[in-house]
Structure formats: C-alpha cells, structure tokens
Image 1 (tube, rainbow, N blue to C red):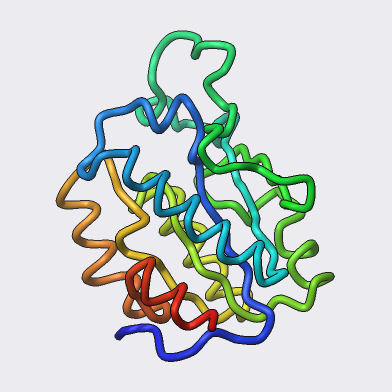
Image 2: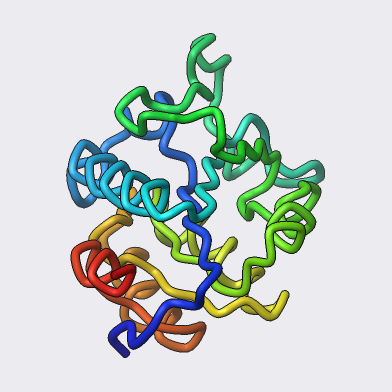
Length: 183
C-alpha cells in the first residue's frame, strides 16, 4: 500500500549504510541506495525530524556461525559512509544483531523524541531492514519503507521482503513520494 501520510513526528532510520556492507555485491547498486538514503536524511533534517543512522559491529551469540563471514573485517568496516552527511544532531545506534531495536537504546531514544512513525531504508532488505521494521511494528510504531532505498545481497529475499513482508507491517513507497509527504 502506498504511503498515505506521515505522522507529525516521524523518524528516518537508515540501516547499515556502512563501508563494509555497501561494499558487498547487492541486487541494486549500493551507491544508489546510499544516495536515496542521503536524500531522505537531508529532507528529514531540513524539517527538524529525527534521523537515525544505524551500523552493525557484530553478530548474535550462540550457534550462528553458519551466517557469519570468515576472517577479520577491515578496521573501517563499521564506519558509516560519508555520503550520508552525518550531522551532530543525528542519532547514532550501533547494534550487534540483525535488528536495530534488540539490545540498543533505539526505542527509548525515539520515545524521548515523541516519535510515532518510522521510515526505513538501508541494506540488507531481508536482514537488518526487515528485522528492524518488524520490531518497530511490534513496538507500536507506524512503519513505512522506502522501497527504492533498500537492497539486499539476494534478489529473491529482497523481493519477498518488499512484496510480502513490508506491506503487512505498514506502508511502502518511493523516496520521492515520501519526501513529498513531508510537505
């Protein structure tokens, strides 16, 4: 369902737009996803709305070795890409899991700011973005996903999230349509 409205206090949450992840082979060029994320961030900032930049530095404990890449990542792997134009007022969340809510202060920080709706973008659609969107829905936030500002490492997984999961969690639309709703 296309985005119909944005709440007065909507936050933008960009997932894992960091050097180590944007450098991976994705379904849609990561540079385009970063550019759309940066455009959304600029629009939210210009209207005084919260921008949350999330990065990941680890994985869940336990028997999850099968999903972990081998070796030690480069030192700058978790650094956000410069193209996002991070500002001092942006909220930074570092996560150790797929989703941005578990084990972080994200929910508390959003509630302090009176946020009732979240617009999501980032990489990977079926992992960090979907996990975070599901948690946002479970926490009672209105969820919107900028479907042209997300991509995945796997085309089928991306398609499943965009076509089957996100519409059940909230609304989906393009970057330009969402910016248009900001007024």
